[in-house]
Length: 414
Image (tube, rainbow, N blue to C red):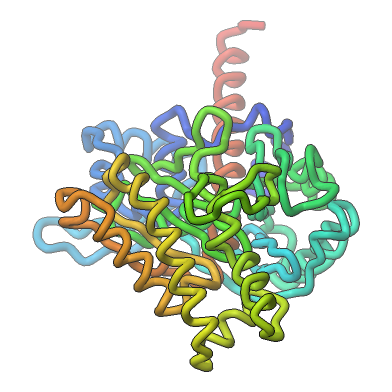
């Protein structure tokens, strides 16, 4: 069992010193167990493409340090039953939130991606970071108190804008007034006293999808189609952020049909001006329909309104056009659609149709095009899994440092 002190005494360092990509076998094993992608030595060896002996050695070291425990058996198709692996403390959890313009989805995220105490709370992103985060923190504190703060290991937040993950700061957002450069991770760490992880919401959704997909689904694009549009990219089972963290920012790809329509980014003719929920609201308002949000668009489509249905179908076509270029280039296993617009059949059908029309047959031959598996909880789950991963990596670093110091002391090295 992971003792309390081992997780509460390690130093909380700035985000720029805390990369989520593990560099040691032990850290990768922890990542896979925490996310639920692997729960046996055999699964770990397959995921890591590593010899069974190497994986067993790493697992053994983690068990010795109390970071991983073995229990029960998993059904086997033959041979010896396989022991199942879990994190050392079964009650550990992270609190997490997926932020929108007006609401936030919050809850407790457990190792493996299970959730508890999930709810939607009011959240006004336009009020600025300090005021908005203070209200959010009160709601997250209530979630933590309900489970017991003694086993709280991290806090994760999915943000609807670009994020400098290493520094934990919002980076030049177009729809988050007052948030640019704000140190969200540091603010959360000071408030809660545990490791904080912040990332773009589409990236968090991609991380969450990775936890529930089979091991052979290792290359995919996760698209969030809500008030704005974003994408998370998974390559070889890892989230890919690009050189400056902007990978997947398809919302600002220029598209001919948009003409010179001004975009929130300051450019003109971006996909966002035609295919986002915010654009649909504006388009339908100009046609005399009474609505204020993407949720209102979804309601009108569900009620069979022909103007809303046509607008949504057209938005899906435009998104499919931009995705076609990316799918042809990347050749992924799957394209997953999330966000409020992904709940609408005309939108999903239009995206799918455009992908088949715009991509090479070799690319679409085995391509899966589907809604995201975790629905409205995806961003929150991804943020929580990320926070747990950071905390576990820190615990491993602390354990390695303690072991190294013990060896040095025993050898009389100062």
